[in-house]
Amino acid sequence: MPQDGVFSSITQNLRENEQEVVRGHFEVGEPPNVRRYYCLVNPKNGRREPNGVLGDPLPRPDGMTGIKIASVSMYTCAKAEEKGYLVSTGYVLLGAAQAHAGPPASTAAASAAPPAAAPPTAAPPVAALPAAASAGVAPPVEAPPPPVRGTADPLDVAGIKLGMSPDAVRAVLKTKNLRHYKEWTETLSFLSGAGASQSIPNGRFVNVIAAWTPPAAGAAVEDFESTGESFEVMFTPVPGAERAMAIVHTQGFSRQDAIHETALDEGLVKKYGGYVAAGALPESVTWRFQSDGSVQVGDACGRRGTFGGLGGLSVANAPRENLALRNTSQELQSQVERCGDTTVTADHYTPNGGALPADRLVTRFTVTAFSPALGLEGARKAAQLVQAAGPSSEVRSKDGKVPDL
Image 1 (tube, rainbow, N blue to C red):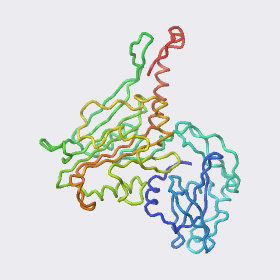
Image 2: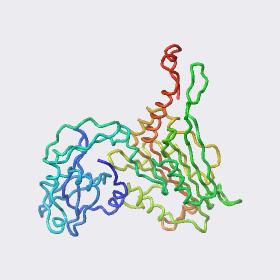
Image 3: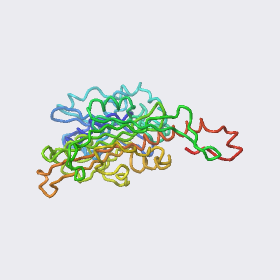
Image 4: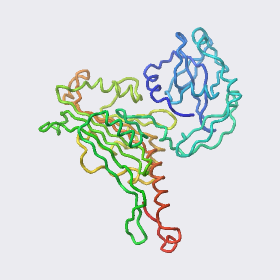
C-alpha cells in the first residue's frame, strides 16, 4: 500500500482524541512483523478519520471498540478499503458511526488481488497482506523489497518537494522572484588502472540549484537580523534523471518585520507533525520520517550536522559536495535503517530570547530536508553507470583494478 497520507496524517494528529471508535482494521508487514492499523470514526458526528492509527483497542460499555492511540500513520483507510484490505467484521457501530460506516469491506476483499510487486528501489519496505486477510487469516506473503521508499516521499520545504526533477524545482523557484539564480553541474568519472580520472560519456548531471536574495548592503548579517531568502537544492547524481534529495531554505527578517516564535512553531507542527502542540517544540527540532509511516523526533542519529544550522542568505560560493557520492552506499543504507527515509530539521534565531514565549520574535529560520533513501537510490544508479562505462572486464582482469566512483 502506498504511504500517501502524510499531510492528512499531520492534520489528524492535531485533532486526534481517545473518543474515536474503531470501524475496521488492516494489516501491513511480513509475519512475524505484522502491524495492525485501525481505522476510526467519530461516534457523535460520523466523521471518518482518513489515516490508520497504531494503538491498543479497548472495549466500551456501549459495545463499540475504543482505542488508546499510539501514533497516526501515513497509510490511508480509503486506500485500504479500496483494495479490499479493511476488515470490519467484529466491530460494533451505533448511531452516527453506523450511519457512515458503509458496506463491509470483506465482500470486496474476496475478489481483490494482491498488489503487483513494485521495483525494489521504489517500493516501501512493507507489503500489504493479501485479500484473504479480510477473513481473519494471515496467509504467507512474499518477502518485502529492500527498505528504500524515497520515490514516493511527498515531503516538501516551502513548496519544493523531495524527489522533484530539476525542471520542477526551477519552476517553483521562478515563482519565488528571488534576485539571483545559479546552477552547478558535475560529471561522473572513474579512476583508470593508471590512476587517471576519466569522465564517462553523457555523465554530466545537475548537482545543485540555488536561488537567493541577499540582505541589503550594510545589513547586519552576522547577527541574523536582515531581510533575505535563499534556497539550495541538491540532486541525486543520475544524469538526465536527477531528483531532489536535499533542500535547504533560509529566510531572514529585519527586527521590525520579525515573526513571532509561536507562529513559526505552529506552522512547523501543522506541516510536519510529531508533536501534540507547538509549545512542545525544542529550540532546534528534528523529525525522522520512518518507512512504516510513523514520525519520530529528536536527533538520535546525529544528522543535524549534515547541513549546519541557520546558514546564510547568500549561497553564491562553491556548492556542497554531493552527499550520494561523498557517502558510501553502506553508509546511506545504515542511515535509512537507523534514522528513517527522511530527516527534516529546523533552526531559528530569536534576538529577544529572554522574553516570554508569546513575545519572542524570530529574525531568521532555516528548514532542511534530506532523504538518505533517495541518496542511496542515486548512489546505486550512479555506480551502475560508472561500472557500465568503465574499463571492460578484460582490462580489469589484467590489471586487477576496479574503477572507483
